[in-house]
Image (cartoon, rainbow, N blue to C red; front, side, top):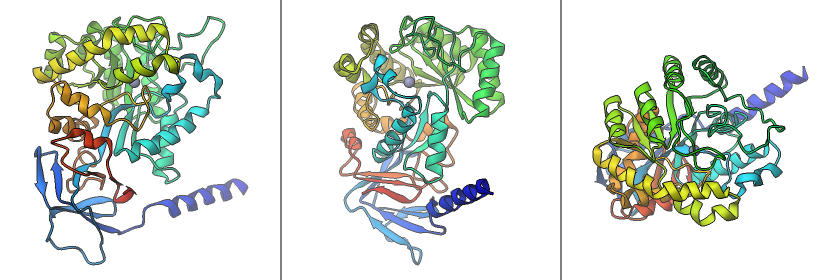
Length: 423
Ligand SMILES: [Zn+2]
């Protein structure tokens, strides 16, 4: 009886916090970036009904009776931004062994704070590629239920990896065991791992295919799964309707993953001409976190990052940016993914200027975080553009982001699902 009362109370709370039904909002501004056409439009008027965009026209078009109107004056409207690579439950100030002072569920609380910061920074959708305890699923449920503010989340839950690899807990002596449901060592056991994380809420499968920078004891370029293992993961994930993202710095791991049919390559630092060719052949995206090198090198030692990790970052940071320029020039499809959590969540938009510095035009960088990200998520019907049918997820900046992409670092207006988050 008491249990039923508790469920009823929770249901009542959900209803109270859910967006009001049949609400119509009309937003006008001086300009709008049309990411699908790749150009700016003057004097736009966007009508949102029940959280979804119902019409995209021009000021002067009919305004539905009873609609709430929001005039953004001289500002430029853009779609809500998408970061394809974040870790909401991480805090870079607690790197290395510093995190051991905190209890296991502390990271969920960190995620609650970071979800709010990320949304207020204009990122209305994120792909969370790796967290413990299914924390990203909890955040998603909390946000969708209206308990806490945050972006739409595509959770990977645990990142899968091999024993001793980037996603294993390698920083402890053998007498200390850390629960690691995500570690496997054969094609069949990786298939089982995909099924397990899918069972508990994963909407994308993240795999640690090569060594990494922030992990202890592994070489950043070394492949850590066999071709047969990554192939089994890809086959299983695709059968379940899920896409596969590989953490991969090293050339061999990147190319084995691409041959196995992975969908996105994260980091891609040491990708070569063969990788570019394979990515184009298979239609895979590169998702390169080219901002955070500055932060890790400046703040890492103070934050507790291992000395060997700083050495690896020095070895690979510049090379990754050079690879970004080359991959983009070669015509590889590029995404906007920052590894938020490795630097403070909420500073995600700082990567736009880096992408422009390393070869993209501002519209290309913005498309990587909107239109292309939606394609890579298989979510072109609901996020990534100001277009009929998609969620009323929008940001506005004071000025022209196609002239100065840094304006995106300080959006003055954020709307999610037709509700104003920040103005
Ligand atoms: Zn990451």
